[in-house]
Image (cartoon, rainbow over all chains, first blue to last red; front, side, top):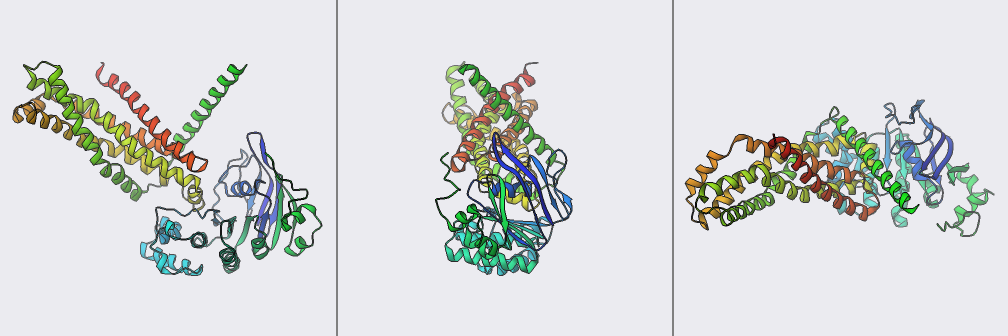
Length: 250
Length: 256
């Protein structure tokens, strides 16, 4: 369903992605792991078209997302939802307006938008009380839930999660992980998550991809990951400072 | 070698900035044929126009008063009733109303726009808009620019009236002028073209103020410091452009 073909991306002389290739099948939850600064977020933004890749292509449901001049084409066939690292809620809008942003743009009546927003808030464990608050009045964990409600409100076929548990305490993080798992299964979406939180990866992943120095260096299931003899994977999942993944002194 | 390298860097930055601005302008123009968010336009008209009115009115009132005093003390005091009223009216409508009003609004509005859009940029809210199939140029940039172009002339029209009344107030209260004569002189001396030239200038200043606010906010990066820089750049660039374009427009309108 999603084919990532030889994606390259550089910023000036810094080559961040050096040819990323992988396929994700429909309904699968893929998690991309790797150290900070290895290009995980850049890859996600290239797939979403938030930044343009230099080479390669992304094929979504058979539709090429880059043209020959490497310009991103807004695809129409597939609905995509995104949960951003910092939630990225619109701080000038109330919670229910954030959740129903997509619907309100389509000209759906205010009353219907409000009702649907409450339904989506309920799906992520929030009640109507928060609907008329502004994002700044909520905790980080609640903001993440609202962002998740906004992402699922468009009934997406593909969901992207960028560091969904960053900045949350372990309990809130687990709540978010379970919600992601539950909602992805509920709506039957394909999910791509980038994270370096292994607890999160273990909960939500069907398949893990490890990125290092701009390339996918390993992929496999959770079980395969735990028993992997790959020294990069081993060092990363056990959080050891000694090993081939060295501390970047620059 | 060092000098050449520095010159090269300056040229590169200049070309990069020019390219970035051209792209921004092109995308904004393309948004004209996209979706129009009338609610956002209305909100921005309120923000730029209605909420700027007190500060612009105060600036204009005191400028009109100070101008009346300067002309009276510095000019011919024997025929001062007609001279003070006519120069205050001309000065306010042609130059001081639009320029000072523009600079005051630049300080308030351009900074606020750059800070708001800049914060949206660094907190990924602009990316979130795109992910929800919303063009940020249509949703954020165009409503602000259209509001600026529409609102500034209205704001400056009020500023003109208040500025003239500031001159009238000082002339009648401090200089013992006859209020009716002052107003009659103003009316007989002032031509429609004096007012419209100022309003055309104001409209262009509205474009500059909102464009600079949006542009600097849109390309801000680096967190709080980046947003701070964007805000400063928006105010400085819009103030300089207002003064420079005012000179050019004055030449075009009155030098021929």
